[in-house]
Length: 153
Image (cartoon, rainbow, N blue to C red):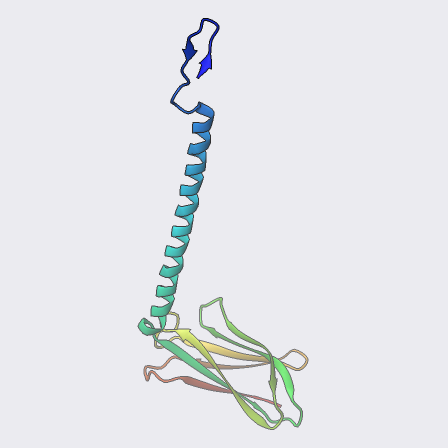
């Protein structure tokens, strides 16, 4: 209560000032937005985790086993590529060592949707001074891994 010149007091308003009210609304709205973002992030994370957990159970895979036979006395260093026919996304293993006088096997996996029965594939090894060797195969209906062999000197 504030005294006036005429002896009457002026009552203070029971309503908060507009400035305080706007600040309170801004703080509450920021809190709500942050809470919604947090809840959405957690929901998306749980959803992705569940989808990833179900993928191996529901989809089958097509395996390609590439055997590199090094008949040379020295180890070779190189890269392996396996690509399904018509695909622009090969699977690649870089910086592999192919020990001399040994056979080394590498397994590549593709989804069955990407590799239906009858679809072909190409396996390629690049070694030494940009020497290339390729082997070709296709997905057969036997539901077994396909094996291709590439011999390097």
